[in-house]
Amino acid sequence: MTMLEYLIIGYFVGINLITYFIVSLPLDFVTYRREESTRKKNIRPDTKQNTLSIITYFCSLTIWGLFLIIPLEQVFQSNILYHPILSEFSFSCTLVQIIGIFLILCGTIVAVAGRVSRWNRAFSWGIPVVLETSGMYRYIRHPLYASYCYYFIGFLLTLQTPLLLFLLLGILGYYDISKYEEEILVKNFGKEYSTYQTKTKRFIPFFW
Image (tube, rainbow, N blue to C red; front, side, top):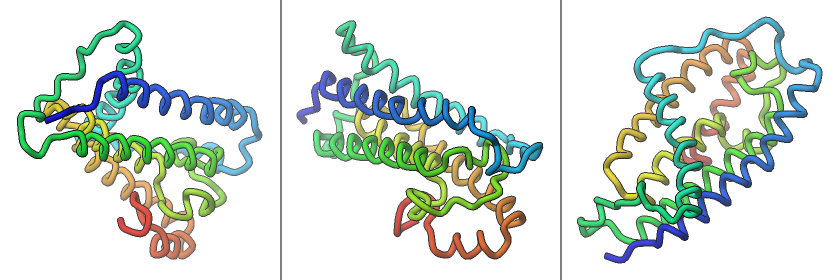
């Protein structure tokens, strides 16, 4: 089976990383300098901690590691990460990798659009006073978590190594975390958030 050249993958991953930082870093800088008028002060819900959430955080760190290491490998002309073991099987081919690259691209689009939409209304910064339902939040309730889920599957299909199968646990983890957060949001926004749940999907627009 033919496989995508690692150089192509490296450039693609690097472009996605640069795009995310170009959009997110300025917004983060502006957000932290703005008056915190759109979130409840001194209210920071306890982060849900269990084995699955810890695994999920590790999966997320792995994604950032891949984003950083894969482009660097092209600079140093190395291919330590790219040993597609699954290429030995008939279902593994360039088409599968293209699907993986498409999912990585979707992850970046969702992450960037979600970051532009939320400003400082992220749950991790405190329970927001105003419920954000515009921009990417009009289509999915958890853009950041969704982007990681796309990355988990995308990198697995693109690099095609079973060593990354553990990333699929991250999807279960983010689903569990999103349920926990939504229970708190329902308590704070009541019917407004319940109605929002019925109109908007969790991770995949118009589907799930």
